[in-house]
Length: 274
Image (cartoon, rainbow, N blue to C red; front, side, top):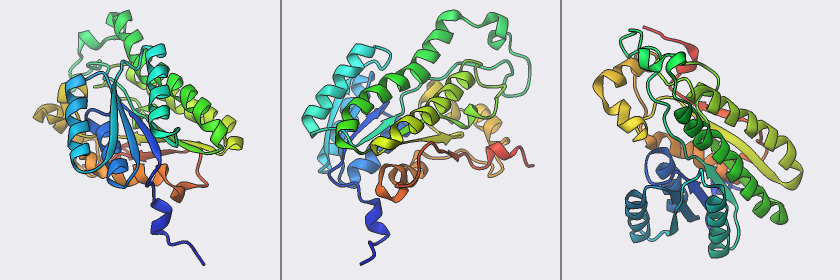
């Protein structure tokens, strides 16, 4: 008998880790997995936000736990993965989502030159922090996941990249684009290597979503307008809109997909349309 299409989206009982899960897109990933019966571990350095999210999901009947962890601390992150696997009996799904903004770009939202974002003024420590969080932590997470998933012969890894992995943005800090492009390349490389072990590696590449990143920049009317005008759909997305795609990539519904980067950006990559 042919399996129901809806059954292919079943993630109930799967052990899942989400990094950067206290808010925004990471919290949306955690919510959709928990709401559909997965056992979810939330990782974040924001202790208060993490506790609130964990309590809310737990009160709704979800099997959730959390780890306060800085994803740039490799040993701490690896230890958190080990504890999660022990608590939930392994690892089936990873959302490597943790990321930070890169500050202002070399243009302001109204297209004036911004000296603080100019290449010659970029702070080395800021560059290192963005690369450590948005790229190196993805490597650490993928490595930990591979070690846990290989013996099981299965797994799904989803990395949050960005449409900035493909296009460049003048109003976004320069370190963000190479960090996300590096993460996208790592997804393809890991997908090639891990396919023979039944492990799929894909990326979700969001465009402008209203989250807490950059201090909630896209909730600021001027910044929001600057992004909206670059999106053919002329709006910024809500994190609820990323949930169906997350569930698709985590589940058997995407069983023949690996090495893909799925863009969800309202058409921003197509170019501005007035």
